[in-house]
Image (cartoon, rainbow, N blue to C red; front, side, top):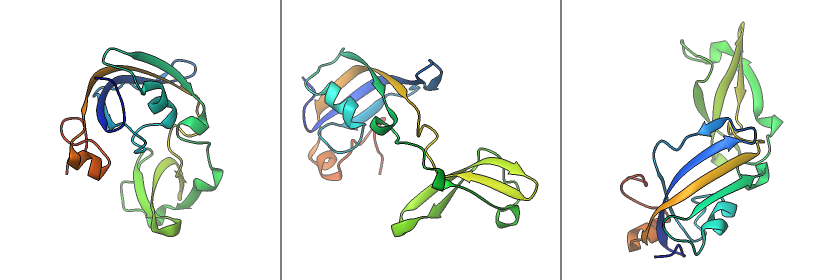
Length: 158
């Protein structure tokens, strides 16, 4: 079966920085619903369209093709007093941003009584190399199509 709209696709993948540093080794396969559901980067989906099990692809993704450019307005600092005890670098907190959307922030630095936060995705602004091999292609269920994502093993669970 070839990859086409409304198929569930399983990929083994690796994401590296342009210089080769592994950012995501793909320890578990990625399963996504193909066909414009925004479950995978559009450039990757376009490269996989029409392909079958065993197909391999390596793509260089510019920031605009992946996690977008860095937005320095998402970097901020707040008083350590506003955090519960035990705040650590690498910790995350969720805030409600403009329009009521959830915004994740990562603690990047703690200096004295100041906590530095970054709301950018950790891979924002980076050129990435995405390498994948198609492991499985199957028709998506009516429920998966209605929910706009794959269910079950390695997919979304309700």
